[in-house]
View 1 (cartoon, rainbow, N blue to C red):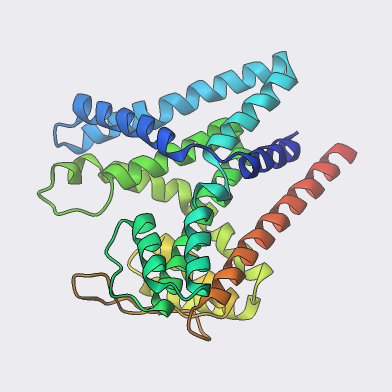
View 2 (cartoon, helix red, strand yellow):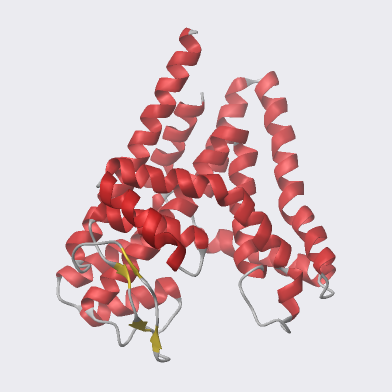
Length: 307
């Protein structure tokens, strides 16, 4: 049932993308409510808010799914499809990537910059065409992990509750747990959210990076992962981007000017400079990794059924 549920959810999301803006608005209201009720600037307050915001909804979902599973398998399957539809899918970010790629192919650099700025929320006026493609590939590799591979891993592990747990934990990590100045009111409050998400994401990050290596240039991906990942300031990002860059044979990272001076970033990957063709290759890499994961899941299901 897990394999069929995943396929149905992915097909539904491709046919009718989730209204991300509306969902984001609801989650943002939930986030602000928790901040207002719990944030008094102490780490333990952040722990309590995280339990209410992440653990409680996930626990309710787990109970509901287990009850449905033993009462009516069809209801359980529909619940799984619904949760995956909301929490997982390429279409939650791919429209930005596609628009940037099309603009670069048409030679419309300013349009590509505007699309990238709308996606990242940062100034991109000084980026060259290669830099726009490079940053877009980086964002796509990270988004593919956060929106597709990691939620699917936790869905396989814990059912709909797992996918919900991952996406909620990720949201609160980036809303509360982003690196801030020590005196920021959210610094202490969000510390636990950052540590909790790092623990939840530890295994999925490495499985996604390994998938990129298997379906791409394996030798270069492993080389870059082993020798370059720790150069990146954020551990998970370094693993994903170094493996993805090696698998694609493209250079990522490198210094760029995001409007407030040159931002120094280490070089990741080996090979050529990024362009629209490499953007297409990145799409292929992500889809091949997904197909491989689904095939493995299907084979495991068949083996379990046969046994």
